[in-house]
Length: 252
Image 1 (cartoon, rainbow, N blue to C red):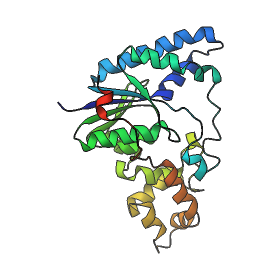
Image 2 (tube, rainbow, N blue to C red):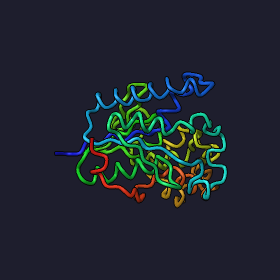
Image 3 (tube, rainbow, N blue to C red):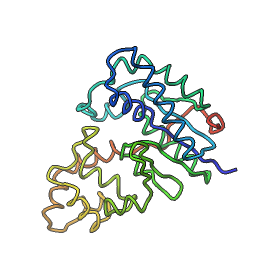
Image 4 (cartoon, rainbow, N blue to C red):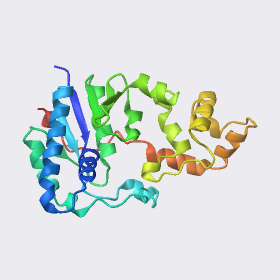
């Protein structure tokens, strides 16, 4: 039987529900936990996976903060009220036979990317449940990204139709335009339209940086070469995280 893995970006799911309900006290958290469990149950019904995991983070600082101290500096800290109830969420998810997991010093993004890469390499399929667009770089014929709240599924065709570049260029695209949600600045003066124009012409960031073409946009990127390379490193998801678990442990 082929593996069909549902990989849930836990905080993306939980925090969306938490903030939508304007929670003020611990007395309100029961309804948030129930809503998160219901959302996961709906996802299980929609995607019918053989394996699943809700990936969380037990920390606010990761290896990316060592590379760039202002990483996510534009975000507010995770509310203590939410963090203090993580065990309740894990217990609720376990009622659906779905386990939670996290890896020290890594974001959920990297853990989920690793799971997706491993499953795909064994000819399985993966649904990444998140509204975070950084996961679009993981899309293949075996991996899709699902916006659970917007009820949209992104595959290769959807990415190309929306951004006018193939998935293979997405990390270079983010290196050029930045990732505002994580406070990754990108190249000054390069917006989405300019980034697409450059990638359609030169294909990769490195080819832009090594070009001898006398072009205003090329010169902008070359003038910020270090920043562009650092941005790419920040947005590139790791697919080799040591999970400490095998796929069997996530079987439903």
